Length: 153
Length: 153
DNA sequence: TATTGTTATACTCTATAACTATA
DNA sequence: TATAGTTATAGAGTATAACAATA
Image (tube, rainbow over all chains, first blue to last red; front, top):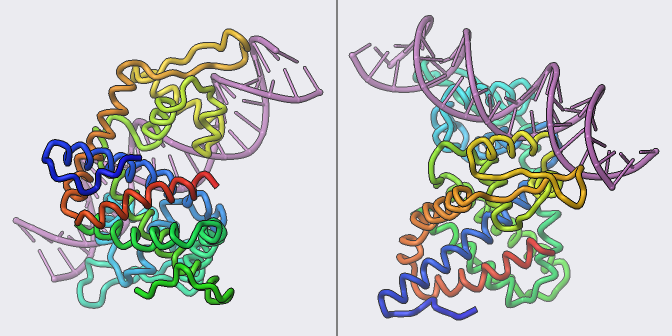
């Protein structure tokens, strides 16, 4: 593959960025797809897993905040949260400061489930990372910071 | 962040790989999530988009092959394919060599839709890549090859 | 009056089980 | 008898519209 990453001529630079975009898009979507197949069990669906994982990371949260993060309407998120509460993975209680809101928090079982799922995914990924060269691992380590920067911007 | 990518002591190397795994997992899932939000329109759902995109890339395909790739049962894939055929994006015809099978192919409209969706996602990503440094872009370019290697292994 | 969450209803995606057609 | 696809039916996720409670 030709390295076009620092081309300075404007039209060529645009082409280089489009090509890099295509490669990043393809490789990231593909690996994400593979990772999502590694889940702790089948009792919790993908949508529930994503919601639970974000609550675990950002709690306490309201229904609205969680729905916005997941790109889903409040009624939809409300239903998903209901399933997680029924499963004993989340608690839902009124916000003492504002009775319209509900506060979502993970139960100990919910937190354990998140950690277990991450462990399963790492279980798939770690041996594959170990099989790479040290240079390739260093490239990935550098790239994760850049990927996060893209998502934030 | 400490660079642990070429640690040689076995226990420390295991820790380093687990840490890298966590960072790769998180950054990839997060960017993928953001990219999927950029879609050409809302007439075609995510599941339909994924199926259509894979047919575009690997046609001709049978229902079973497509379902296996998408991690979905034949009845489920059959329904999704039905929607895409109704929408004029795929064709479904019997395999002349084996009457039990059906052959799926994209129509010109289906191919155009795939390209349009990719264009939309690039439209989100390209300006963000342009805002990176040349070094960061080079890191990403190197990393895409490594990410694909992980998915293949 | 505006905001937050919930309920009602409808459509898509998913699965398992059962059926049809072909090999 | 085995395989590929389809149909039947049911559960989960999504949306919009309408409602209730609170600020």
